[in-house]
Amino acid sequence: HKHLIDITEYSADDIMLILETAKRFKEVNERRIKQVPTLKGMTIVNMFNEPSTRTRSSFEIAEKRLSANSLNFGGSSTSAVKGESLTDTVETLCSYKIDMIIVRDKHAGVPRKIADVSGVHVIDAGDGKHQHPTQALLDLYSIWETKGDFNGLKVGVVGDIGHSRVCGSLIPALKIMGCEVTVIAPPTLMPARPDVLGADHVTSNLDEALPDLDVVYMLRIQRERLEGAPFPSLREYNLLYGLTQEREHLMKDDAIICHPGPINRGVELDSYMADHPNRSVILDQVYAGILTRMAALYLLLGGSEDGIVA
Ligand code: CP
Image 1 (tube, protein in one colour):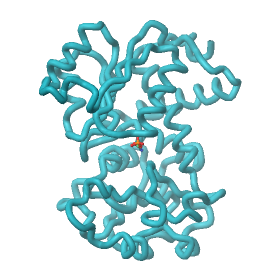
Image 2 (image 1 turned 90 degrees about the vertical axis):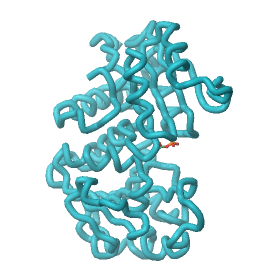
Image 3 (image 1 turned 60 degrees about the vertical axis):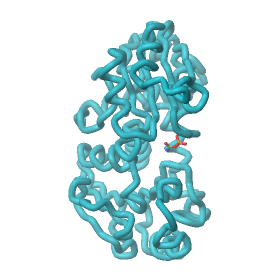
Image 4 (image 1 turned 30 degrees about the vertical axis):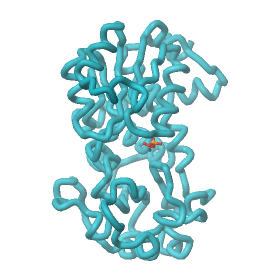
């Protein structure tokens, strides 16, 4: 592959190769090798036009661990605020003979447009409500590491489905890997056509769905994308759809909890569940973000085999 923009362009074998490569990088990290020369001389532009903590920092750390040169660029500090077009911006960056652009943008479709005009490798780091493919890869890594296998695994994706680009990549990725996916959301946070999500089941009843699930994937309520007053109210949402200590008895003994971050504590997750020592893999997901992004950079940029273990 040249780009990582649409996870549906990746097969189960492609995804397993990324996860296996990420596992090898974990082994390297655990040998306390802080940096490998794999991408020495490559230049990667991190173009973040929307806020980010995890994605931005983990890409930057992944690039440094692979010895690539990073340029952090984007948002209100660029000449886009003076009206420079996306195409002119990208052509300017490409004049520096860069190798890759990683882009986050509030508009769906920007990564594809950059791929069309730039000729360099592009990774989508989250575009509008469309996709967030590296999030799906790190989620799959954490699920694989904890559960060992995807086949027939019952995964529930709960919450603000309508605004979620995480869903746009995660649900197809889970299906590609053979999981059974249930989407759980209040009707007001469900997309108009939930059938296009590609899930096996769609429901608005969390309490009925929970006892079947091996993985409970809680989504963030995207307050910044809710127009006007949120309905249901955040308190009502927490009562009906929050994964709270009171709901733990409905979960399988070995069911795990995932969340892409950032968490609205007290809304979709209470702190008891977010920090649950046996169930929550949320910080493992964050660590997997570095490993899977190292793997994606390595595989897309054709790093040398020696470089992975040097
Ligand atoms: N999960 C995720 O994309 O987090 P950030 O917005 O902090 O990057």
